[in-house]
Amino acid sequence: MSGGVDSSVAACLLKEQGYGVVGVFMRLGAERYQTVKSPAAKPICASQTSVSLPIAAESSPTSHPTDPPRSKGCCSAADAGDARQVAGRLGIPFYALNFEHDFDRLIDYFTEEYANARTPNPCIRCNQWLKFGRLVAYADVVGADLIATGHYARTDLADHRPRLQRARDAKKDQSYVLFGIRPEVLRRTLFPLGELTKGQVRAHARRFGLTIHDKPESQDICFVPDGDYARLVRARRPEAFTQGDIRHVDGRLVGRHEGLPHYTIGQRRGLGVAMGAPVYVARLDAAGGTVVVGPRESVLSGAAWAEGVCWLCEPPGGAIRVEAQIRYHHLAAPAVVRPMERGRVRIEFDQPQSAVTPGQAVVFYRSDEVLGGGWLVGA
Image (tube, rainbow, N blue to C red):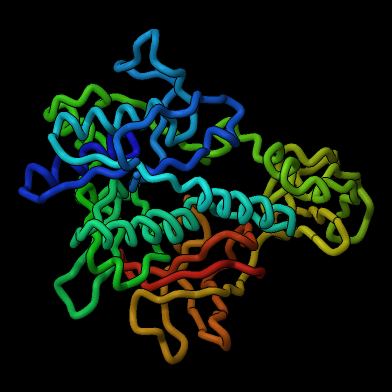
């Protein structure tokens, strides 16, 4: 329970359906990395845990002048208070677990990826390591049979293996960030919101009498809610901000840059070069410290490589047809995936795709079903 409307309604629906529910909140210490600071949370109870994606707000109808100020990230003292209030209304046990050490590992991953000219996806790693990693271990400790979250996704357990599927509401679908759930964990996972739209979730929140029914949700990374990720990367990896050349794909020197972490593949704005026609970041050369730019066609790729692939289906013995989604807001594209050695795959798109970005995830679908996914390493 993150203190947001999604995980709160998920808990309410499960309680209504007769489950024995235990609410948990993850204390991550994310406010240490935020521009907007929140005071340290007061103890909630003897044991101090969240399972849904970050839901946060600058203000809420439940705020009081003496409440701690809200950060724009997640897991603040105010968010913990909102989650505790919902748990109290439901009459369920509520715990908050200190995962600050584990969260620091996530920050290290985030800054390391940028320092190596890759664009990370911390939400997927958070799901793998924390929400469906450490929290699953905690569920085992307390004897919980199932894990439930406020994600918009669905599971189908009717067959011999668990299947992860897109949410019914395509606009809210979060299956892309869940591909790394281990099958044995997916088998015991519930997504109560998978059949609902956001509007229906808020309607349920009003029906349950939750004061957070219209609490805004954040679209930002929880530990950089102001969007200034370069500030965090600079604090951890200052050596990554070395000046270098900006070159056109034809080799011409067209400008200088202040550090590779300021750029990502496909970027058009803020390049600091004027060439009389739009140019895009086509490549980041970490070894040479060079940003390579070019016309739109220079960011189109007919194929890509991925590593660290995990499968939710039987691992294929040869090439398979899929729809491949290469970033969160990308429309999955028809492709052929060819398994290679050491967990790598080659993805061959039917039509060239824009901005294949190292560090981002590629997720393989068959219709609404997630077959698996991995991490892009290049085109």
